[in-house]
Each structure stands twice: as C-alpha cells, then as structure tokens.
Image (tube, rainbow, N blue to C red; front, top):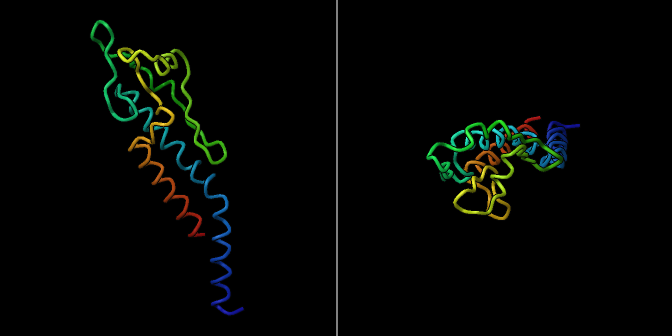
Length: 131
C-alpha cells in the first residue's frame, strides 16, 4: 500500500468515526452546560442573564439553587435536571414570582449555552479527526 493509499484509508477511518460524533459532543457538553446553569443559578439570573425577582422582603431568592442542578449525556442529548422545591420556582407561571433556572423549551438556546455547545462540538470533532 502506498503512502497515499494509507493516508486515504486513515482519513476514511476518521470520517467513519464521525458516526458517533453526536454522542461524543453530548459527553463533552454536559459538564460545560451544567457549569453555566449552576453559575446562572448561583448569580440569581435566568438562562438569558435577567435577574430573578427578589423575595417579598427584598432579599435574594434561592441562594442555593445551583446545588439542585445536574447535567448528563444521554445518547446524543444533554439532559439538565432540576430537583427539590426549585422545580416549583421553575414551573411557577406568575410572572412576578417565577425564577427560571433552566432554559424554557421553545425559547431557543441561551447564548452562553450555545457557546459551550460550540466548544464541545469543536473538541469532539478535533478529537475524532486527530486520531
């Protein structure tokens, strides 16, 4: 086999490895997305960076909300989970008391999370192509 044939075979093998790219991206993205969601929750802001409403007494609401957030890769998806009483704040529909922790479905991907998805995609693609 010539050097050109070997190089082509190697390149073809790397291209075939892209079949698992979505799962690889999800594995790379999960901790990055968890970090962003936890940072926002710790800062008391929505996924888009808008401050949460304060409590009735004017103090900061949900100071420990970041502890209720986890993210993991499930196949080609990143599943972000919220637990405990924080779920009620996420789901509460009264605008004056809602404290959104997770991005709302259908609202688009918040910019900081999109940035982390691009970073994870770059990492996974680079890893696949550098094999």
